Image (cartoon, rainbow, N blue to C red; front, side):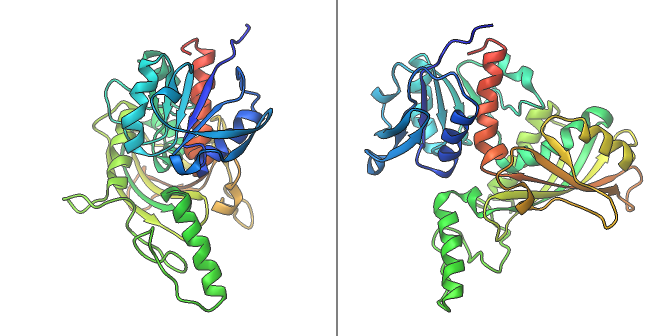
Length: 340
C-alpha cells in the first residue's frame, strides 16, 4: 500500500517534547511532504532546528501558519491548544494534541495505541495524547484489566522534573550545579526545591485536596479503559529525576491473577518489557528507561493485605512514551487505519 506524504506542523517545536518529536520523525522515516513547519512563540522565531533535510527555521504560531497542513502535533500547553488546535482542524488538518485541553472531551478520542487503537476511528479532527503518568500506569495495568478486570487501583507516582516542562528541568539541573558550588538552592518554576527532596504537589490543588494531576490519572484511566466504575486513588509526587516517570500500584482485580500469569501477560504486550525476578532480583529504574520507548514493569507480587490483589512497579520515559512517541504512534496508527 502506498502512503501519501503529509504536510506536517509541530506546534511547540522548541520545547523538550517538540525536540523529541522532530528526532522521531527522522528516525521513523515518517512520510513527510517537505520539511515540517516548526511553530513556537514569537521569541523563538528564526531559531534553526535540525530536521531530515537540514536545519529549518521556527515560525510564529498563528492562524495563518496552520493553513495548508495535513497533520499538526501540538506540544505547547493547554492554553495554546485551546486557542489554535481547532483552527488547524477547521483548516483541514488532523491534530494530535499533547496537552490536557481536549482529553476529557467526549468527542475527542484519548489514545494509547497499544491499548485502545480502535478509538482513533471515530476522531473528528482532534486526537488527544493522555497524561504521561496515565500512559506509564496503563501500559502496565490495561493488559491485566483485560485479563482479570480491574476494580480498584491505589497509585503513587514518582514524576521527573521534565514532566513540568523544559524550564522545570533547567531549574532542577541548575540546582545540581548550585549544590556542587555550595550556593543556595532556589525554586521559581517548581513549588519547592527538588534536589534532595520529594514534593507531593504536581499541578494545582483542587478544592477536595487532590491535585489536578491526580484527577487526570483518575478520569483518564476510566475513559481509556471505558469503565467509569473503576476506582482509582492517586498521589502524584515530583522527585529529583531528569526525565522518566515511575508509578507503584496496588491492584484489586475481579478475577484472581497470579504474579506468574501477570508476568506472562505483560511480557506478551507490545511496548512493555518485564524486568522482574532473578537472583539477585532485578527491577527497572528511571535511568534504565531514559531514552527508550518501552515501559518497563517489575516488582510484580501478591498483595498480602488483600487476597487476589497484585502489586507492581512501572517506569517510562516521560518525554518519549509519555508524550512524543505516543503522539507519533497515534499518527502512524491513523495512517495504517486510513484515518489520516
